[in-house]
Amino acid sequence: MNPAPLLSAAACVTVAVGALAIAHRLRPAVPDGELPPEPHPVLSSIGSGLLSGFILLTGFLVATGWAARTTGTVPPRGLYLADLAAGTAVLLYPALAGLPFTPRYTIAVTSFAALVGYTMSLAVQLRP
Figure 1 (cartoon, helix red, strand yellow):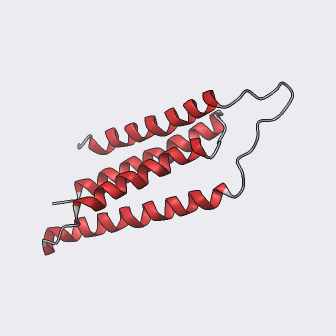
Figure 2: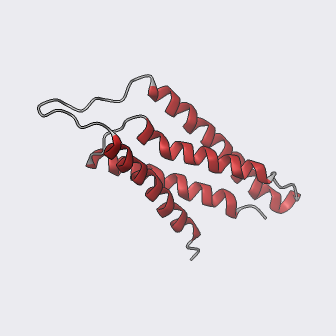
């Protein structure tokens, strides 16, 4: 079994949950009796755009990496760097958007980050 996808998933979980914890620690404390502020609704459209870009780029790299085995046409290395940057932005977005550091959100971010890491690893491994 190839451990690279699992290691990539674990690294992405560490980045995303670590960023969420650091952002929570750096935020000012909420006064007693008040609820923590919810993320601004406008931020959801930014996250959707980041995620769409990451999915399109990773999907392109997976498809062309798979096809490159028969065609010999390999995507440029810069696209892999762009995919890494897009993946990192997607992982850091929940912390930057002000998502609270609660068990519910931590589980959601962990699950999502594992998928991001696994697909990024798949895109790189399919490159001949």
